[in-house]
Image: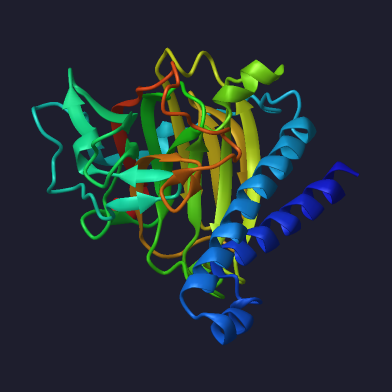
Length: 326
């Protein structure tokens, strides 16, 4: 029964995301009335709709995943890996030889701005806050860095150690992706691998335990061909105040997710990616067109007492299977 419900929820979520990202069914009417203005309005309406649907569906997934603890005592076997990438975030500035601020400006309910990411005391800090006089105008600011076109890898074990930002209306992520993820392409040609996402902080004020992270897979682009699978929702030890590690082992058989070295879930959904992927560290605000709107992480408010909030990363490491490095 639970499997059937999860399948239905996933299908609804995929359809919602597809409608929100493209508004494809309404574009002909929009073009007949007013090409630019009405299309933009419809897309905004559908983007808001998908935020609500993601929230509703994710609430269902949280309940279905109860009690949110791993069902196995398996741990990651590091003896089969060789360290091939490491950034301890020492020094005064982010190492732009391996990282990039690939995308800046509007991102969902806020803005990505490279000034929000910096090094402090041997850690990477991505600060999320409201700025009245920000670079792109008044709004919510945060950032993302990634290794796109600078460091990419196929298979291996990927891990970061971090403290999550404790605020409503935003979430942090450590994820892998590929520029091959396009509408209609199979998972083997590139899959978004969300090692963790942290949208559930505000749920603590609604009677649900808020120390939960999610691990997810996406492929087929982000319009009508989009496919999604929530692999696990996991309870973590005090993640907003203490460092924890989040990792994924990726091989031709599938993806295995870990928290603090302990397996939390596994999947081969969509066919396992066979192409190089890059690593990303990001924080995002729920919303549309740079404006906050209610979603799976709640809604950010300019006068919120939990802002600014910081995503603090101690390190990022990538390991390769030792037999593939020989």
